[in-house]
Image (cartoon, one colour):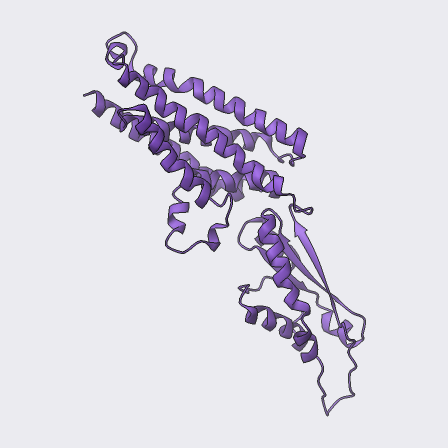
Length: 321
């Protein structure tokens, strides 16, 4: 808001530190919206009366908003944001203008107020638990589903099942539906424990939370069946499942922010269904994002589900042939 020399000194000092990339928005609400939508991790608000209060020695306040959904990153931004009140900045505010009366500025001309959004107490459990839910669901659906189909191959019972009156679709549904129900039960059981034991925030829409669970589980089930069509043994299916599980944990934004990763590996992160699960569940539980705001991530999960189900169906038929 304030475009005076004093506010520009603050912004220049932040930019010169190299920790932040600066761009302007219209008002304080826009800052919060940008952080809530994940387009920014922090925002600095300098009120329109900043320079007037400063020259009157009334110690104005500069507000730094940080995204608390990732506590370690929020702590780093708070520490780096301390450069705003660096002595170099305040010393640059002392100058003499021969054409006006001298202005006396206090030793601490302004204060910094840090506001942590979405996770004010920086609870690490609020950061990890939403992702842990997705990991457990991935283990149940991905590993167990791929093993269930391969087990029939190893026991040489697959051909017997397919010559029976059971259709191929009925066979796939019979093998996967129990894991869908188990995964949904686990999904809500872990959520209930998180709400009861760790005070995890409630979503603003339980319908959107249920939609997330169904879309994610279907995507994982489809991937598990796809793995089973290219695996001949259970150890091979487990290996391929772990080959997907570990990168999902490391690259999805569950532990490290994606924007902090090297540019060449970020496309890999966005090619993982778990990445979109983490984005949606944190948006629902911590930021209370709407369906419109999360629709790209929902569509991505739905796309993964359709893609893997189609691929697994085609591969399954070719394998049988």
